[in-house]
Image 1: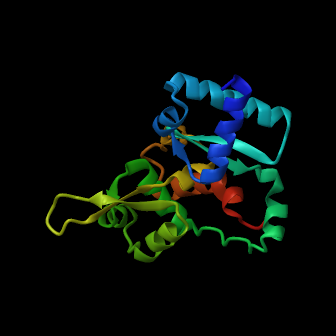
Image 2: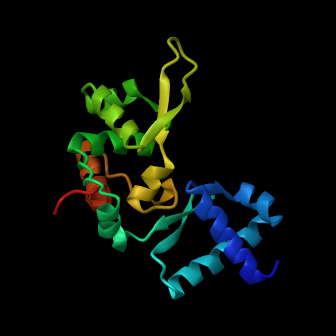
Length: 193
């Protein structure tokens, strides 16, 4: 298979999947080393930038995924008759911040940091696909652990958690951190202007 065919095959595999595919899995599929997969991905990204087709290549942690270009979101929503998502509340951004910066965490840890019950907010974040269960803590009662998802990375336009904004000084509160994260993610989550 020549270079152009590999790029087209790579595009087809990602398109058909609809979900992020790990670099390891792509290495198996294309019989390539990780460096080869990265080269194919760079070439595909370049092709998509030169010939805009309304699709972009995302790199999320150690995975690749195709996604629609956000500049066409209005048309996609109209075509699929999608209702605008409700924006996250300040409390949800605070909980999301605590989880993102401290994961994996238990619900009780989040509640201890915030000082209030977080059950409803965490359920909302799970339903929106921004946090997920990550196993159980090996302590009495075996409480569930939570962490962020690939959808969280996609929503906030980052490749991995190292791209999160710096934690504020101790002088700042969790509210300030939630506000900072909210500012960066508001448009992606669909807040009305």
